[in-house]
Image (cartoon, rainbow, N blue to C red):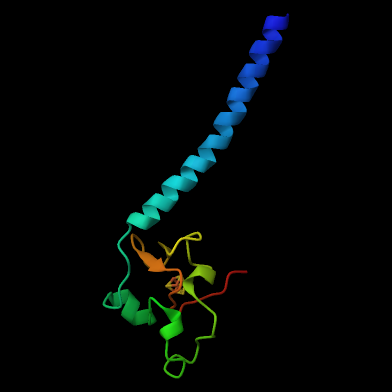
Length: 110
Ligand code: SF4
């Protein structure tokens, strides 16, 4: 009986560790993928169309009246990155935008 309890405890511990490891591995893999993506540049056709800039702090607010100080890709609902400097964006599949970037499609995260 004691053996069965030990085996059950070991099994449940292994199961819990495995369940915790899967999201961590997915998180790390996602970050690695975002870091590997080519960065969107100002020369990109979509970037030109939406007025993307890699550094919102250098944006001329007079030329972009919809820009609100403090808004940046990192705070946009379409941003798919985490706390790293670059992350994916729904507008630029397969590429990464700068977390401190901005474009006219900016939509603040809820
Ligand atoms: Fe940045 Fe949002 Fe524009 Fe994508 S849609 S480039 S995340 S501001």
